[in-house]
Length: 319
View 1 (cartoon, helix red, strand yellow):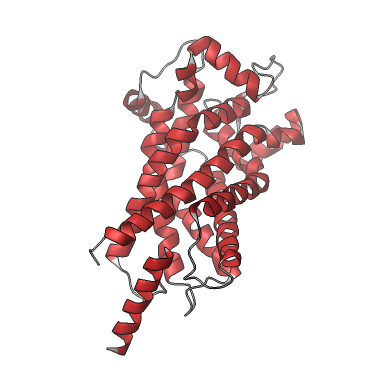
View 2: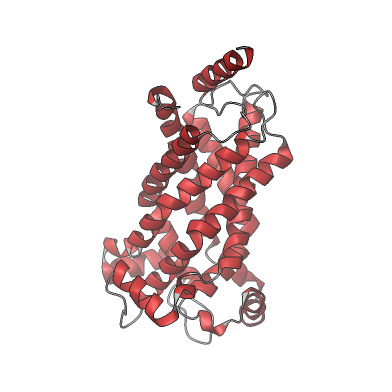
């Protein structure tokens, strides 16, 4: 009875503070389902808001210096040219691919992190600094393998194809069927190694920064609630840290997933050729649009997730 009462008290405190209760050292289906569902809702809403900056970032990274005059002089010019040639809707080309993938990606990310966190917090409900990194890393690797690699490969191929003189893909399902038909399953699983490196480092950095800032704000008291606007500010900072930490990996990943991926033998060969033919600055192509997107993305993501979880905690009676 003492243990049961203690667990109930911990859950009540967690509900009041919108945080996850200390671990029970056993899998809880209700809590896992709650985290996964909240993550999926978060992913769908976030990508609809931030996709244009992802589009611009990808275009700039694909605009290689290969002896041919570049199409864009910068992010503003990319937006201008796209709107001129295709209208405002042109900035949303390829959205369906990311929308189909963002929901499971975010669901896996938050579901994995919450479960890893639940098994690693101490008796006070806090994560130690090194465990913040490890839980974030685990969440990033999980989403890279289960959702991000195929989604990102399709996104890059679709954006690359739809800006060519003669687009080959008529839509999402036609594009997927053609890629699988021509290249096999590996056609939608290109760049898995750099994607794991990117997502693993991304989430390790973001969750570490976010959890550390929340811990600082709460002054070590996990029961203290964090206002949603503060969560947004912390998320923007966490996103900026991840951008400066792993944009070179993102550039390599994008090249390996594009229609010209055959030019590279692998991750190392891609990095060497970029450095040799385009110089070290090429590893930071698209940093500005990626910075604007990621800061907004991470801020919105954590704000939405915390808000959805707060609603779930108030009304979710199962488990």
